[in-house]
Image (cartoon, rainbow over all chains, first blue to last red):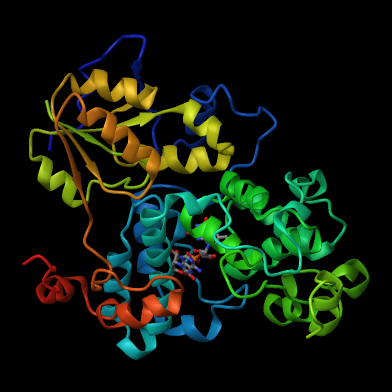
Length: 279
Length: 149
Ligand SMILES: Cc1cc2nc3c(=O)[nH]c(=O)nc-3n(C[C@H](O)[C@H](O)[C@H](O)COP(=O)(O)OP(=O)(O)OC[C@H]3O[C@@H](n4cnc5c(N)ncnc54)[C@H](O)[C@@H]3O)c2cc1C
């Protein structure tokens, strides 16, 4: 392989060689990204702490704790890896991550983690086999509503994180500022958009893809469809108590600031899906 | 000169496509801002992608993906990592009309029989688990012979 050969400057209308900023000078990198992105909204100021690059990927991979993963992964502060942006953009391969887990951890203890890696492989296979399913309902909704009952566009209060539901606004704030959300927070947010606000999953999926550093058409859209019930047997929903259980101190789960999410599963089910038989 | 198109689904030089393309091939990245606008990518996403390619230390060109690849390759073969992304696949299909294109896959994560039922995850997992729990080296050594052999 020939290493970077900047001498061959090509000048034409179609293509322009870029004088690259230094990776370590983040301010210069930011300026260059802005310069190279004339279509980007000038009000978009959020720059994640999470940096791209192979060295960052290797550091994360070295910190992998596959043995503690199974017991804690559902907690917002559990032993999840934040490897997803690097995997999504192919800086590291799923097989490398699996090999690292097996090198450090007995197979039985690593199984839950490897099963989660397999979810990505699974979604990617579906993407290859049926790319049309990525933006279309795979099946119909199983919520007692039809697709036409759901709004096409994401309401502005959701896009801005100003829904007035405290923990939902916190999750949205994290999405907008860091570009990363824990899997459980993604589930909560997607269910809020689809079921509490009755918005089409496509609108939510597109919004996630704009912000998630790991935004991937297959993992994202098919997970949204799983929540919406267009690719599962039943809709996914939750209650405030569940967020309380998994979120620790960092999330505001006070009843008075999260009323729409409060109640038993049966109550919420009846509220969200009034056309279905009660549970 | 042979080109290796480093696209946004495989931003690495540690990939079999680089080996397959050989020592003389030149890896390049195309920054296609119109494509990012179309996808609605936020500043954060663009930063992540840009930092990832900067760290690879390869030439970065700004332009329309197809036009840039046509011009830079000047009819020579193009190598690219495989991806399910229809946008990349379509690009490679169009390039194939004028030149040789080689698409190279990364090592498989699991080895499952063709035609495995993938309607729901756990049906897939039941078939995939045995190989998913093996190292990549062992999977390659044990590979299920393909049907037509
Ligand atoms: C609504 C919704 C949207 C999502 N959008 C995306 C997306 O755009 N891109 C994306 O990569 N994942 C997506 N996921 C899946 C999952 O939430 C993330 O992969 C995971 O949270 C990433 O964090 P992590 O790297 O710390 O994961 P870990 O728990 O540490 O898992 C390790 C790796 O396994 C893979 N993985 C784990 N769980 C899943 C899963 N359920 N589906 C697919 N892959 C998984 C990821 O590559 C991840 O990096 C989405 C899930 C939901 C519910």
